[in-house]
Image 1 (spheres, rainbow, N blue to C red):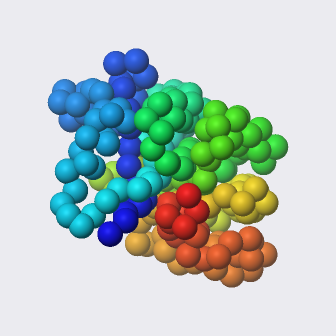
Image 2 (cartoon, one colour; image 1 turned 90 degrees about the vertical axis):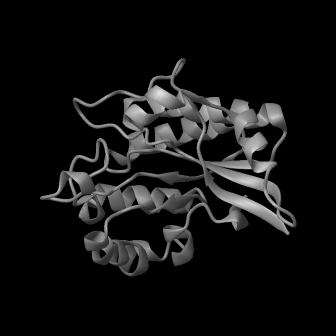
Length: 204
């Protein structure tokens, strides 16, 4: 049975620090590269056979005053890693879709160039809770991106470029997500399944 892994991560915090990954990575697994990943996936039990994968951004989101992680450089790093192995892989990168749309498009183009034909979509983690910090992911500034006109313009921009959006949010944010992706002015940019599951193997 041929398998596409729709969501995996690579990192090397010795060369590319990313404090968003937390202490466990810093203490126990500072480096996990393409050869490590493929060695792990080679242990899949019969009859499973890995034939393709999608790398999803490794929590590189950033906010004013937070840790600065070069998101385009991550895309370049991942593309070089998978390119060296010849393993078929797509890349879902991070772009802050709540910023000026012209700037978001410029950064998106930089990701496309860095991905060398592998860019398939964008993930911008949206998990935020007004009262429980345990339910707010690193560097997610606030919980109303889904209602933000600039964010919606950013989603439309992805549609114009034929890219998916990986939605990740808390349950109390689902209604806003449904309104943004399923209905109204911006909903027709996407097949809704691609909004919610941007790492779909059909887009590799």
